[in-house]
Length: 512
Image (cartoon, rainbow, N blue to C red; front, top):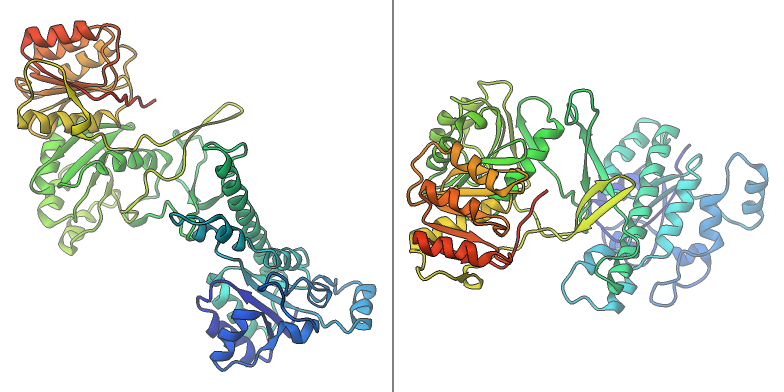
């Protein structure tokens, strides 16, 4: 299919001028609308205005300009049907061989704070989706370009093939075009639904495949990785792999858990995750010191774990990491000397990117048989000023630091969760037990350090004082939990008897 005539009408002008210039230099007549035509003419390009083609002015502030038989007849005419070609010839309609359209920025506008309904409505494109769908339907004779990322490849193919675009390319572009309009309609439908209720009657997802994974939770399970698309068009789950083997399902699942713990802290911090639970978390003056403290919590479990830090990996930290078996390492950056040390091991997966994530955006979703469970993310930071000390003794400032640290780690540990912390490092982690007292016993039994003076966090209230008693017997001197049990007075009485400081948050953090 030779491209002789193109229609260009875009909202985003990114990279448009060189693309259209290439079309013009290839002898293609370019038709354009409103602002797009002005932009191209200012660049010195010869453009045929849409009104010259339709014989009708653009009206209603541009709401009606391309909805005309002279446009849609030229796009939709089936080149292989003589009756179609006779019809447009009799009406004086010339075929349009290439349509270049991207749509009004509805998602960008509606994602802004305080946007007015009238502004949202004006950014619902009508003519654009009609042209995109028409061209995509008729891909046998028409090329449709909706993504500026395709400009270079389309132009290169036209130049290499004497102005022709292959059927394979046209079909690929048509598939992208239908996804473009489907995503657009989904965003609009979701916006209308969200105006009516917090959880809309219909929830639509748009996911873009990033790639195949090494395998799923087990080697016999196939797996792939998909990303949500942000209103800006950016992918929400972009990561950059700098070194190592192909990622697996479990690698990414554990990495997400580790990153969510890390997002709780602004000071230098290291998080080690194994089987979707933190097995070591610590803060210190340097990331190297934080790593040593985190590793010391449970070095056996940390073997083959996922490690994340919130500072650039320097040479001292790289030397420490190189002595351990690390499945995945994530950091916001790496010194050149550190990369030389780390890449000696071929298997370690070294990642960066995705540093500033919106962890509270959208919904937390979990698949169940036949459907989906949807909830808000548990991402709000519990503030000390909203917590209540209910014992006679108040925590010291050192104890407050350990209590808040333990509380943030407990939030990201599988329920039932009991976390023991001392000097801003986890010293005992009890996760995922059916009984809270068993989680407490596990946390104490796994501890490799004396627990005298430690802080204990429980992700939910103590239904009985037995779990707290296990921590107190081990040496814990302060405790933080949500409160709300019918037997809160029993736990409080135990704390008073043992001289412990007890803080109640009023907020539970189950993680299933």
